[in-house]
Image (cartoon, rainbow, N blue to C red; front, side, top):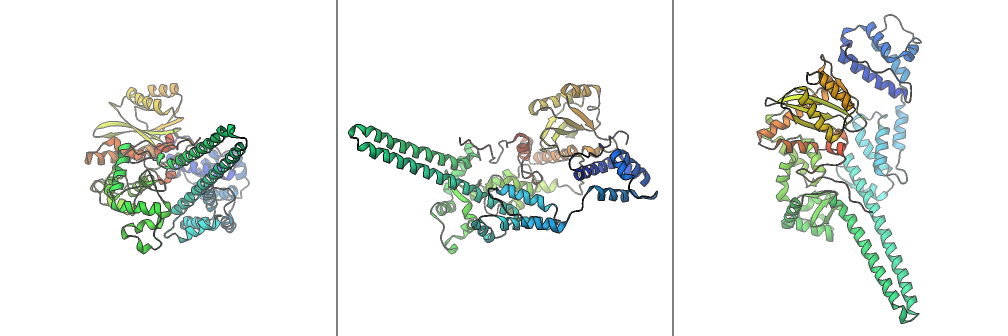
Length: 533
């Protein structure tokens, strides 16, 4: 207990209720890590809590009506009642159900506001469905509301995606209409000038021709802008040229895709009975399909022809991640009907995954607050794989990790590994590690001083306090084992893991959170949009 620093005293600056909640969480982690919850009785726990929370709170404590037999939990309840105001659930729900979309408010801002309001409504398991219902109720456009009400199996994510697509389409249509008006005005003005010049005789014909050239140039400029606007979608999915040509070729050779392209370009039959059975799955989202550069897209995802789907499944499951991570990876770039079901079957029937499946595993506890920026707080640990030592460095913000092979566990080799990583990504504010001899020595202390960052170690009696690094050690070992078992490239497995979206990080990938971009992997990846200026 003596080796751990207690949390700072309660701050009375800003939102006191939130400050108290944060202090209470940190204090609970502190007593758990130090073992004070076991070693001390109620009187001792009360004394430690008051000593830690600060003098201002002791004055509040002196106003409580307490006895010498007061339990620690009873004291905490009194402080909870004092610092945390009681919430009126009925009023909060009324505010939630009254919230409609404001003028000029985008769908992302509206959904974010609904999520914040729902936190105080105690919706529990109904939260997502009630947010979905309030989106349908609160949106401004009647046509979009009708579209959502007709949608079968509409969940919150699908509802948001349809609203975003509708929003983008409206913005593009407004831009196109504005461009048409501008061209018409140029044409009208130039025609007037041309007719006027005709009355002045043949000497003015050059000006009329110049006006016609201006009309032609204006049209060309507008057409190029529209072409670039549509081209942004494919530019944002930079498939390697060889893979792109392969998808185009297979799309062209697929008999069903030829008919699908015809329907998308020329229009779908009025009666669904006239659509072949093999294409009826596309009818439910036909408004989201379009053809560009001989490829079929569903929103921002390439629709993969039948002949390439098995290969795509192999690439998706290259590093043997679980079902949900594989689905998230796929949804960011590719699509075909029943893709989710095929991913489930692929993962569930994978012999390698079954062989290395964890049994009765326990998640290590992580007690760090989420940092506000990437590469600010890092966790590190040393592990062995096939009797070789490796250093792992994990960013607490993005969950991006680096793996470095070590020749030995000397301080010099460990410091050199850190320097090589810091030279690429920058120096952190805080580095956590365990109490290994390669971290706790004079040379490492000099390294932290010279490179100007703080080094903090976990408690020897509670190594789980370095839980994030320890958790990712298990992740990396599993990736390596599965790659070696199937004789695959371990580093490709690491690359695909860093490019896999995570639900707990708003479906962003570690690479995207750290570097604001996804690196090119086995599957198509998003990149920064091209400039329209």
